[in-house]
Structure formats: structure tokens, C-alpha cells
Length: 124
Image (cartoon, rainbow, N blue to C red; front, side):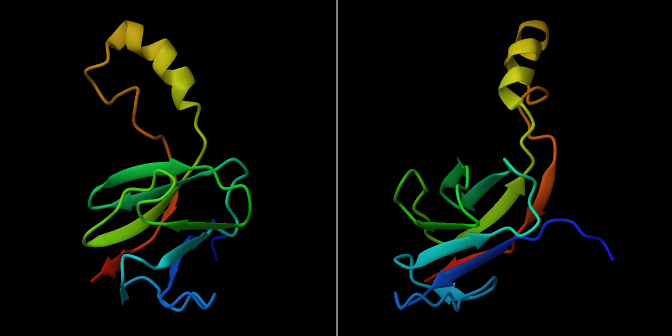
């Protein structure tokens, strides 16, 4: 059995504190979302991905709670999902790589390693 990190995206449909919606569910865009990442490498980054854009968040606790359209999280119209990324010194790579290769490539800018990703929760 592999022992890699897991990633769970859940949503609280009615504000009662119970996160009953999971990947594949349909919910209102006003719902509160929670990301849990047991087994994640310390310093890992959670990327919230929507059909309107992405935002990288640094969890400070085991549960990352967010709402769409708040705190830099893009408001979505169709779906939201999550990715768990290894901290990979992207800024250091850009500083060293851009002067040599240039900024018109993703070679120095892509994330190096994804630990886990979730399926989407759909919005209605």
C-alpha cells in the first residue's frame, strides 16, 4: 500500500458546520469549502482551481476553509477543485533560470511536483 498524501475537497451546503458535499456533488456557490490534506509534506501549497482562475494558499492548520470570491479565491460559475503541490523553490528557479532561458517559456515556471488532486465539486 502506498502511503502518499491524500486530498479531500468538501463543502458545507447549508452553513451548519457539516461538510457533506464531496467531489461530484452539486452545491451553491455561496457554500463554505474545506480542504483536508492528511500526510502532506510540511510547507505544501494548496492550489484552489476554478473555471475562473486559480489561487495558491499556504495552509496554517490541518483544515483549509474558504469561500469562493473571498480572500483572493476566484469566484467560479461551474466548478471548483483542489491540488496539493510540493514546495519547490519556484522563486529561486525563476531567478536562476529566467536570465538564461527567458520569461517566454514555462520551463522555469511550472510546479515541479503535484502530491495529490481532487475531482471537482460542481456549482449550480
